[in-house]
Length: 203
Image 1 (cartoon, rainbow, N blue to C red):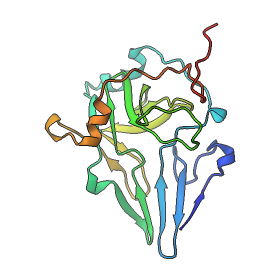
Image 2: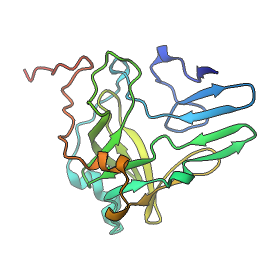
Image 3: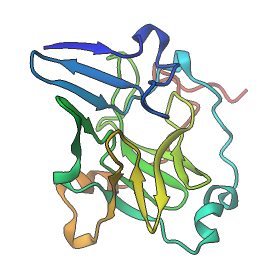
Image 4: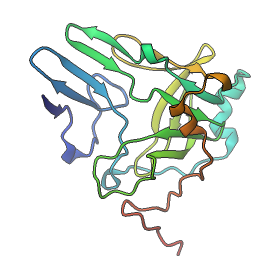
């Protein structure tokens, strides 16, 4: 199996994939199947864009509060709906199939590209969040604001070729082991942290 990236790693994913408005894609090719996988990447610090200052809560939740919508809680794409066919031999896969949103921050699991980069023990982070219209965005540890999902008709959805992935709010009784990971107590990410794990001086 040969794996190639639609965007060279040397460019640190600075350009968007032509078929996606937000996420780069990895193409896994075999003799019979070409799998297009939208992946969550813990963006490299060397390519970090503007960090954003994290404005007041009124700015972050204005879009949802305007409609009186409750967007908080644990949201998950049903297990049997996390992939769908796009065309012959091409399958789209949800890049982030669950997350927890408390109205101010989001908890998500992210992957790293390089072993030497700092990461949490469980690859899960509580990150700064904001609203851009109906889009819920989060600020990765070493990247720029990234759209996680769009809130529409009382639910979140994730754009994808072949149709969006739809998130459902998960009730306490329906939590799975992987969901409980997102609910464990954890501090908000300290954005002073460098890729090597050290903290920038406040001076």
